Image (cartoon, rainbow, N blue to C red; front, side, top):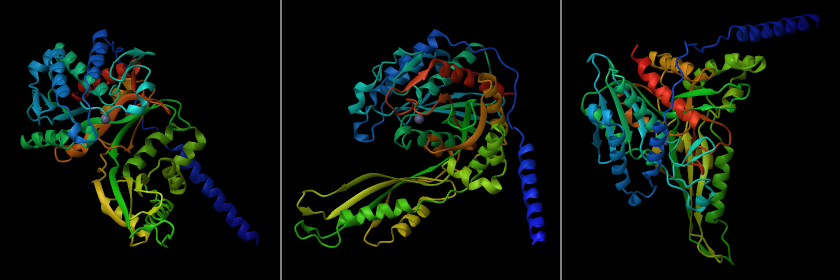
Length: 475
Ligand SMILES: [Zn+2]
């Protein structure tokens, strides 16, 4: 008996030693950098983003409602506002409404890069129109911020790219590598008309860039427990997107004589079964790297958890929501209160974890529902992305740039649950990074929400980021 206790005691001590050893050797991956002069945001830079917001470049879910006029106005606005870029970077209109600028590098052998943003914005939700503190397309200034639809998503990035490039041109800066600026016009509805055509145009010219940089991760404030500093999340992967339609059809009948099988009841049961059989939480490259970058910055106890993912892995993955998510979003059935429905249809939206596919998700759904009466069909499907490594010169340059313009921010690679235009560029670049240098806090009125606004400080950081990044990547 004594021997058993002795063995258990030794095992326990060993266990604690391993936990502590991993914690103390869990070293920070953050970089420090010499600070740069504080970037001064000019009044004209503020006026320009206000003007950009006022042009209603809206992408409607219903493509018949598309109005091209504002997009052409936006092109004219850019040409008039950024005369050097307009005359020196040969702007081209791609598929009527998207834009491609080419900043020719001095060294034809240097790998090129693509800075991306999108011109379109989501519409205003009519019932919430009056909840806006300033009119949604006013670009008004309120509470140290520029108000309006698109201020964060994605005109903030687009205008900051143009401002930085114009400024660098003014200073006579000449990049060694060719820099493409690619602005799609339908990101909010999938990018098939904009980004897909831009990527095709680049491919047609034989362009293969080292990397693309697009919107995606934000600078998160107070969103990671234990870290007070802002966390600049550079998304190195994105989840896929899938909508499935579940349909149950029956013969119907009179409600006074209900049949055993009711279309609504069967569909409801199917959804209930599906929600009870969630997808597993799984580690992927982006989550492993996130743990490595965030972990060392955490207070001791949390750091110990992150340093020992061999034992706490599933706990962390759950916290990161690292699985394919299930969200029933639309349900339709029935026509009259005394008529049994002949058809019940639901749409369920999934955000697919890298490593899984629309087909494997569909299989899981069919198995979970386990009822042949429920037909399952794919409505929209986009595969999740491959992960781009954080161990690249580009990623390190982004880290350095963030250290310069947002000192104190913790940088981490990670996974974005939303889709971006980068998915169309897989054949024209090696690495894909998604980052908007703007802060985001819990409950903030951000992209797509009522009262979307861009704080002055975030706009300044975004301008400074692109200006400094273009300089840094050349070194
Ligand atoms: Zn966007």
